[in-house]
Every structure is written in C-alpha cells, then in structure tokens.
Length: 158
Image 1: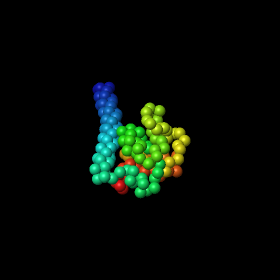
Image 2 (image 1 turned 120 degrees about the vertical axis):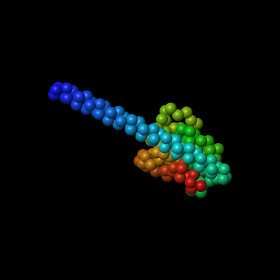
Image 3 (image 1 turned 180 degrees about the vertical axis):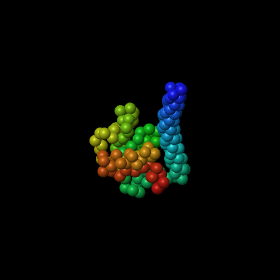
Image 4 (image 1 turned 90 degrees about the vertical axis):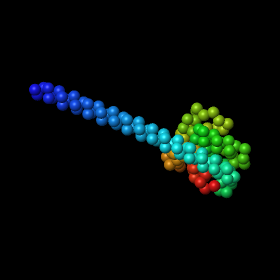
C-alpha cells in the first residue's frame, strides 16, 4: 500500500513539475511574441507619423537645418534606415556612415560599421530602431561624442 501511494505521489509530482516547466517555456515564448508585436506596432506608428509629416510638407532635412546638424550617421540599416538614407542622400546633409549590428550583412551605398568598431565623428547619430532607442543610446554614448537622436523624436519635433 505504501509503495502504491508513493508511486502515485511521484507520478503526480512529475506531472506538476512537467506542467510548471512547460508553462514557464510558454510564458517565455509569449513574452517574446509580445515584444515582437510591440516592436512592429512601434514601427507602424513611426512610419505613420513620418508619412503625416511629409503630407504636411515638413521634412527631416528641415529639422536638421534648424538644429545646425550638417552631417549624420544612421544607426540601423533595415527598412527605416534605408528610407532615411534615401530621404537624406540627395540633400546637403552629409551621411558620413551607417551603424548596424549586422554590418557585414548589409549592402549599402555608404560604409556600414558595427558598434564594436571605431566610429568616425558625425554631428549626430539618428537611431532608426526606435523601440530599442534607450539601449542603443546607452551603447552609443560610450562610443561617440555626437548628438544621439531618435528618429521618432525628430518626427514629433518637426
């Protein structure tokens, strides 16, 4: 009888532990999915704001002129970074270089550095992955003496 009760207790304990481990893995996956969802919502909101400012006849170039920023580096060369590059490339704002954590995998018309490399000087670094701006700013402050600007903040200040 004791052996049977002990077996039942062990089986139930195993089931509870298994359920807890599975639940912990599911919670981790849900958290990752929520972060991804929040990131893409932020991206959609940013692009919407950018489109609104363009429809109002305002440009990022105007903002840079008003703030005496003559040259920039672009942090993040995914979709938004490429659009920012396209907006600035035919203007009088010099794009010194780009920074991307996947620098070796980026094909661009300008030089792309990783954050681990020595970065040339620029008046400002415009950060395009705005969802991670605080983390990126903290890392950039250790590497450059430039103004570090969030594209999101620029769009709201135009």
